[in-house]
Amino acid sequence: MNTATRPMYEWQDLPWKKIEQAVFKLQKRIYQASQRGDTKAIHKLQRLLISSWSARCLAVRRVTQDNRGKNTAGVDGIKSLTPPERLRLAQTLRLSQTACPVRRVWIPKPGKVEKRPLGIPTIANRAEQALAKLALEPEWEARFEPNSYGFRPGRSAHDAIEAIFKNICLQAKYVLDADIAACFDKISHSAVLAKLQTYPAMQRAVRAWLRAGVLDGETLFPTTEGSPQGGIISPLIANIALHGLETAVAAAHPKAKVIRYADDLVVLHPELKVIEKAEQTVAHWLDSMGLELKPSKTYITHTLDHLEGKVGFDFLGFHIRQYPVGKTHSGKTSGRYPKLLGYKTLIKPSEKAIQRHYETICAIIDANPTTPQARLIGQLNPIILGWTNYYATVVAKDVFGKLSHLTFVKLFRWAKRRHPTKPNKWIVRKYWRLETGSWIFAPKEGVPLRRHYETPIQRHIKVSGNKSPYDGDWVCWATRRGRQPGLPKRVATLLKWQAGKCAYCGLYFGAEDKSEVDHIISKARGGNDCLLYTSPSPRDGLLSRMPSSA
Image (cartoon, rainbow, N blue to C red; front, side, top):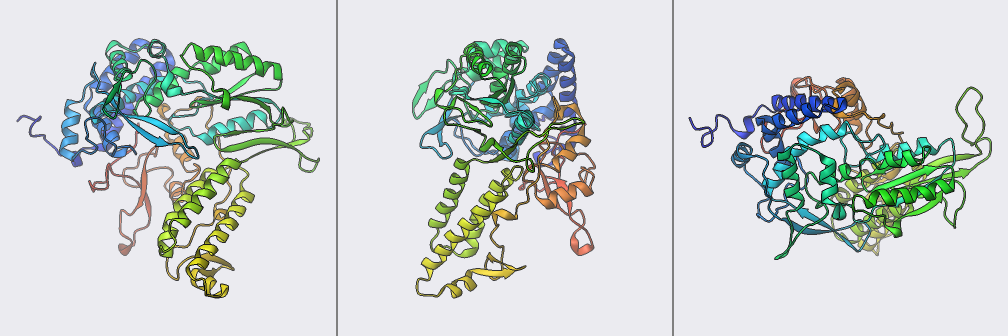
């Protein structure tokens, strides 16, 4: 039988549990070989992974089902595939030495008038990039510097913020807050390919993606530099290009600390002269990669003292600063005989982030003057929950309380405009209800509005050192998953009850795995809630093992 025309199985029936296991076993071996510095073994295992049926199926699933940009078409005009088409793509998927141009899409930057250019590859090129990423990422995860946090599995912005806190909590320091100008658009192709140093077939494929060109409307622009934002492999290419910056700064200034999240970075040191020299070191190192610092977003400040009218700094939406306090509130040094520092380090949501969030809430309320209350709540709750979860790891209790009050005032005005002739008590009783001693914005029967202060403050635990999901320590990553910011309490509780394992297959949840609350036995038959791996697609209706596992 010709399996190319008549496959032995359907896409929905593929054994995803075994596929994920097979891919991860090879990725773990690549990671270990990279730790040993065994280049020959790395390339051999990467070629084996690229040619494997499991990796090809997983790559196709990532770009057609799992990825958030799966419904955006490239120059081929294809934005979705049927299950038989996915299977055929997996059968024919190979690394190619040629690539189609990417389609230019402009998206607005948050809180700014200017727009961000995205380059959307064709669906076949996206699958090729996902396949290459499966092979390259474990190799570089073993090499990346410990204080690099952006676009890496198992690492988040909260890890970067916690790393900054640990570096300044016992000593006030000068800060170089730097931003790389047009990082993705200016990376030198020759420099990043020389740093990549992979086997020839992979090298040619990456070169083809970098030089594919950009189609903006009907005009084709050649790409002599940069890696288009929107490509599956572009974040990994950017991290590879910026790898070594932390080491270079540490070599030139031993006590300086570099913490980087994608193209945003800070350099910390107690002396101003060292920070000024570090800025020159960073600029010189970036020049070798075809990059440069953005003057408008690069400045020097201090965490405690005013420097040219500035104190503290904003990073990833957080405001980081130290405040002079009395002895009853002062931080202390570590050791057997601690001493008072005379200040306290506090990290809060930045003023820009607060203002942008409140403007978003106001815009939603103003755009729905006649919308039913339940529908308005359905639009507001995800916005409020997402924002509060992001800032729930820092000193944000007062900010949450303030935003809750401002939201109440805005909603009361919304209700008052709907009923201008009615008294205030009537309006309150119509749109608010009394529960547990407080008034909540909610219909008589339905989901209430999420109030900002209902999100509890919980300290984030930073990922340790060079820890990576590819090291195979699934107990650690499953435990860590239960403490991630924004994780629903129900999911965290189930993770604890199930000891970090899927209730269906018994395998550990990973750092990036998708899950859902479901029932193996229905509640009508006496079953309870349990946490299971999400199937490849809700339309497929098949419970399958999603994550990578040993």
